[in-house]
Image (cartoon, rainbow, N blue to C red; front, side):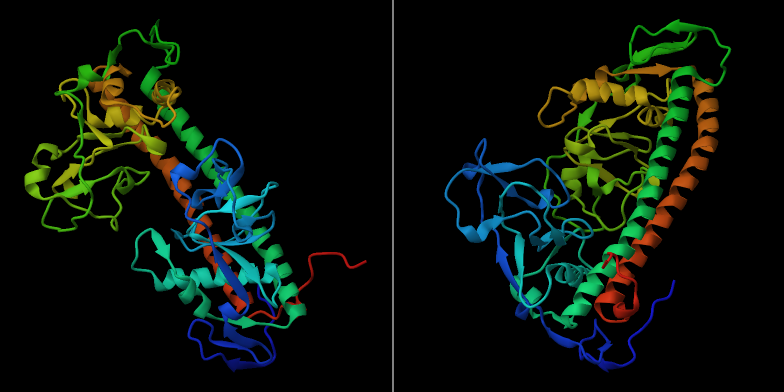
Length: 440
């Protein structure tokens, strides 16, 4: 869909803005907004109750708050509807502007500004800051993950300022049009979740019941596993290991020498089991030697939000070692193949054991000993191969559909970013777009 443009433009003198409507002003952001940084709360300041402390992880709706019950300056208070800006956060998630929604008065932690508008509507400034965020992230394209900007650098960025009626019209236009895009993104995400659920169901059926639906069954003796083919074993993971399950190196990831073994951390592993290209870290060989990986070694995450995540090392990755939050399982190839174990880690039976083993912990943790005691259904080696061949064909179909849905999401999000930039910089005449509310 195309939108109308303004009849007359002028050079803004700012590269990221280009030409702007002739009647708009171009002024440094600091003249239209006051940025108040949060307080530097320490763990010793935390209390059991009191005012919730807004941290970076709360900006996207996380409700796991720390609390402060002491005296606090009013400039650190945040009310429902206030405009915030995460000035040190992850690109695409916690870096940028947020309209805060919480019924209780809160206090602001460091790394977040409260933004008080001056001579510009809060709703319009929110969208301007969204465009500014995209510009800052583009400028920081070489930086992995975290993006930072100082108060001085943020305030110095020149922004376009339309007359007040157009500020209101722009905010209404972007609320409406981005809402349409967000609804389409939500549909694609729901589709992806359904496809992932069906993919897991297909894997779970195959790795616990096999391909012959007429095969006699026997009780496994394990509630979450149920019946299994009568000729299968149900064994502990440690019986499939050629050596004791091993923790990785407790070393900091500071070296990036490509001549040294790559130091694989859980954050390096993609959902498809491959490695990110842009997160390379290494260890000196003399430190890495006890932790060097062999083709087919399975890496299992033991702590935090990624507990249970698994991947199989491939020789094509080059010489690699692994980090302390990972556990290495090296399989006895006369009993199983690494791919059988990897597919089992994608089944509902596997995740039932992970859940059972972590449910009592405050911070999720699944030790090497717990992994070693996990139960896994095991058909004869030839049958494993046949099931793996079948699942490769079936999961490829799901993976293709999931990838298509992700591409659709990426395109929609690119369009959303482009639409915000176009409206904020005056490439769309918002005076000629329909309003979102009734003026009856």
